[in-house]
Image (cartoon, rainbow, N blue to C red; front, side):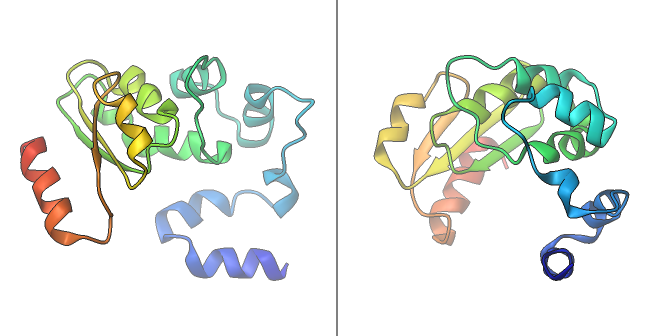
Length: 149
């Protein structure tokens, strides 16, 4: 219960209203012997395109808290197949850039920012990658201008 109370303090209200549907924190644990798609379907009553993209990903690794997949879909579905601008802080292996490209479509403007220069090898694959620090306001403003506002 202590963890649950701490989560409540740091979780945005719109996400918290989604999460409180689950009676205990155990529903967030994941047994790796179970397929992630089955876990999300069973615990979060969600089965959609974003889950398919996430669960059937191959190649680039996606680092996401899997229970956010239904939340992302709820918040972002209206932007699919539009010229939405997406800025992801943290590129890692590029898997989530790939996920967002598949989810939002080819018209989306997708940028990733990371401090690790090795992430530049992801540039142009599923979006544009820029190297810099998320705490640098000038850097972020340059990225926003490059993205088109």
